[in-house]
Length: 507
Image (tube, rainbow, N blue to C red):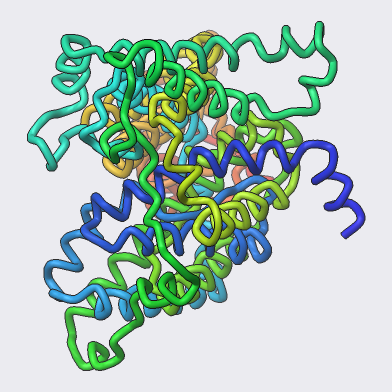
């Protein structure tokens, strides 16, 4: 506890504020896009911060409602025709996730190639930039956490929305977002000149600048004023009392346990949410400056507990989310206390600060996300991967293109498939080598061999000329497939008929 307290005082509180400012509009927007009550998104964010962060095996992962689940959630609520019935599915999904963690299914996350994980991070950064530019220009019709290529709400896609926003720039939003970006990119340099700034979170000043500029526009440049409406501002629900907040929270309808659809939804949520969490965990570990490795099984259990808690309290399903996790890392977060802090701040925001937080323009929050997107998709990441060769950058680029042009899960699946093809091809070509000198032929196996190498070995044996002396060295092979073993035995047994002397060297 003393270690966490020191980490909080050194900087986790600053990271917590940054994550809170990013998570607040995301929680609201994801709830809106899912067709769920606004409070459901906030409840999920609070549970993800306060509950999951304490149980998770990761020090930097941040959990909450995920944009990647919005279509699944919206369809599930429509199919069940009841949000209270949907909450039962969320609880059941949490139970399934705990069971997956108990039986050690977290290892699945380790099967995704690093080139795909890096491609996912860069792609998310690019998507954030493409999606936040419209908000920076004042085009706020889509919620700020919308990361899907095709925008169901208005029929636009990422690129058409971007083009439309450029033609309809709102000067007030542009000035606010540009000021935020200038502050974020120059904060380190400013801290060297004004030492006290190093102890303060840049994101907080970005928000204060945005609020101040918008107030200035109201009195001095009314045409640039973004207004007090939900169109361009944070839109927290306002309640008159704590009792009113409680009445605005839905409860699970347990009668839906008798409906088969609930179990189908629960299994779907458990699988997709678990996969997103494991991928986010892998990506978070890749970004962690200390390169800490967390227990994936413990993460599944933590997500399960979080979903059970969220469902019981009327919240949306939860996953570990890379946008919030990367914001946490780039804001200087070092331990789970930063995520916990963001959850506490979300709770305080709901209980005491909605009037004040509703004065925050979305344009200044867009600048924080744009900064995070730039960090994720930094040009140095491309240089690093391209330097590693085409077998690394091919799945890397494929992942980026599919994530940007379709969605996250398709990008991961197709990128992984391409990566596995390269793994198989590399393994296929390098399992054995053939050396020739005069009439001597050495076939040396470097590693384990499977039936996938049968055709290559058969061809190598076929072209050995008559009169050769063949030595087959399998001393380094720990496992040899039956088909390969049989092929070698048949070759040695019939070699004299071709005028070939063959010898096998074992361990």
